[in-house]
Image 1 (cartoon, rainbow, N blue to C red):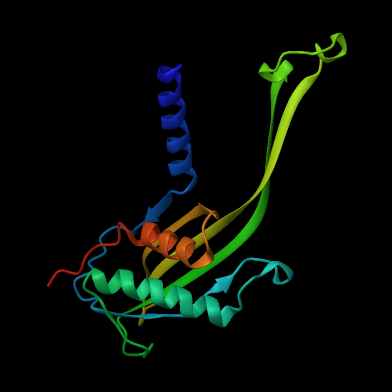
Image 2: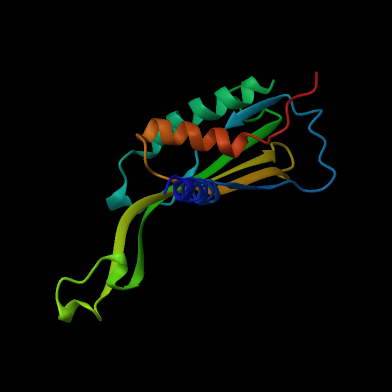
Length: 179
């Protein structure tokens, strides 16, 4: 019995990691050497207005806090002047409700208590929230895209913890500043 639990745990952990992964896109031949300062711009919220739990300004403040913390830890300097900053950080964020369902087949691994239940199918469903996040770095002067990360995050923790974790995962592979 114990030998069966470990593979199931590893499978669930792997599926969880896949569901919360981020895809990184970097155009070829991008040199981050001259990019020392950045500004965080107000992003776009994809969540329908009637389902939003935070305002655009609140989300901007939370995103700005998380992005600044991650990029400053990598050696970049945050400034609020969009003209003086070398690159601009834009984001798109949102949440949506998804329903997962499945069928575990006849009896569903549950013994039948009557003859009528023998051919009964056992199905399940669950509702959950999933978040999307895309962070894009663009050259402030030319508008050229330098780097982009996009992915999905399961919404299980409180909003601030989920947001911080999502920004961390999204920016994990962003290059450190060479000094």
